[in-house]
Image (cartoon, rainbow, N blue to C red):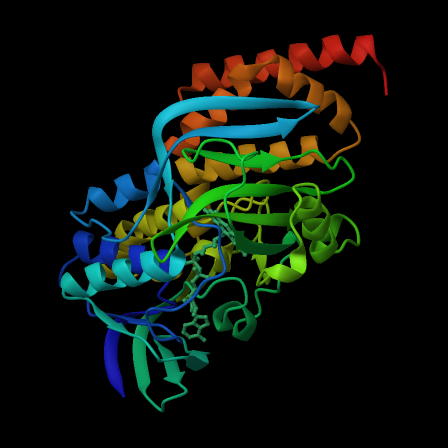
Amino acid sequence: MTEVDIVIVGGGPSGLSTALHLQAARPQTKLVVLEAETYPREKICAGGLGARGLRMLDRLGVSVDCPMVPLDAIALRVGGKVIVTRDPGLGVVVRRVEFDHALAKATIAKGIDVRDGTAVSRIEVQEDHVLVETERGDGFRAKAVVGADGVGGIVRRALGFGRGELRAQVVELDTEDLPSDLPRDTVVFDFTASDLHGYAWDFPTQVAGKPMVCRGAYVLHHLGPDSPKQRIAAYLAGRGLELSRYRLKQFAERGLEPDAAISRPRVMLVGEAAGIDIATGEGIAQAIEYGMLAGPYLARALDRDRLSFGDWRQHIDGRHLGTQMKIRHLCYRVFYGHRRPTVERVLTQVPSLMKLGVQDFAGHPLSKLALARGAGQFLAAMVREGMRAPE
Ligand SMILES: Cc1cc2nc3c(=O)[nH]c(=O)nc-3n(C[C@H](O)[C@H](O)[C@H](O)COP(=O)(O)OP(=O)(O)OC[C@H]3O[C@@H](n4cnc5c(N)ncnc54)[C@H](O)[C@@H]3O)c2cc1C
């Protein structure tokens, strides 16, 4: 039995970011990251990463050495129009198999104990410690455990957090570039199918050095039965592509629910284990941000020997991550509500709304005034449109 301060279950961006930020805040902490798979490991994901995610790592002196497609614009196909918002350097597209491997290497280079091929099989929370067992037969006695094990992880399941209500099913595949695609510095979110609770996307990507496009469909299946496979088949057919020619991958996503518990004594959840943005399914930068908050939070808790984590949710809610999740949850409710046609028209008329979203994705700080102005413009346009065409 190995004695440590903290066991982090899961070596994706949230687990590795938590480890890096905890070590930076409290270098003497004995911590171990346990990752079930062996790097380089696949994570089904389109790899769109806002520049803010890389900046958070940069501040720790961590640069992730892997291929990246630079992004300068986000395009929205909505309400019969294409709205392109430019913000040079707003983010990148990565391949998760490469990004997570490079991040794990950078974490190990900082002297952090990251053990891959080490799946956690049992967790037992006692009053003054937590016992963690792995499939390989290792045992750890820790002061606390961080669940960074993603959408289907063991920490949530074993400790009774429930599976969560806000769930998406997501499918994706990589195809060749098409002449009809937008320039390769642009990611596209396509809301053309107005009966789809979700969207389709085209992200420029690079597979083994070859320029390709990752296309997919994000389907909020808790809002009604739907078939992600049929959605992507129809989307591809509209572009003259045949689904059967490509390798389709499918995975789930979990949204952070307002007021959902994401901790209990000696256990806290981060990243997709806790929940990410349900409106867009964006989760990589959020995972890194969870870690950026969890590191100093854990350091303080260890210093004070107070590991109840009763205010972990409150801690997040009071910071940028919490505000962003609240705003995106509101967007999700408004967009997928019964006024969707009006909202779509408003989005095409008030480009500043899209600009706010892009600025936030890129990591430019948004003032309360800018947010209030955006909300005011949205409401005014909704009233105007509602009066023009009541639904
Ligand atoms: C199809 C698809 C497309 C997406 N596209 C984007 C996108 O373009 N941009 C974006 O920002 N987000 C995207 N996301 C969301 C994003 O992939 C996740 O939100 C993000 O990976 C969450 O990071 P994480 O570290 O919390 O969890 P994960 O990245 O899921 O990492 C969890 C880790 O825990 C490990 N683990 C699980 N169980 C155990 C265990 N028992 N013991 C030890 N380790 C364990 C897993 O092997 C895994 O490595 C997409 C998701 C899907 C499904």
